[in-house]
View 1 (cartoon, rainbow, N blue to C red):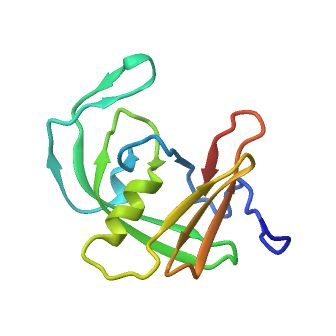
View 2: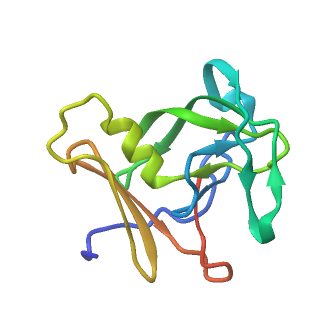
Length: 147
């Protein structure tokens, strides 16, 4: 990582900010907040399998709209179709591969979105490599969390 890259640590910048965990193992983006979704939600027979095989059903699919700032502090709106609404989940998770796949669908992008994970941070890269979001891994939980 270059010396000019700045970490935006896991501190909310306003009262509307809520944690979004970055989970490289999640197959899709997930939110328990209905206000995160735009448009209609659709019933599905999907089941989310979690830690120790726990199973969560009553999942709906829809389009997420999340806003986050890049490393320069510029806010970007991210529209992520085919995401899961799971009201009983109590968590918001960004699946970097799902996010990148949905952005890349039906678009001719020379440099599609990507994610780099190191021992110290997760970095999301998008906009033909123009924008970056560097998310430090938590010292106590080794998890990337952004707001």
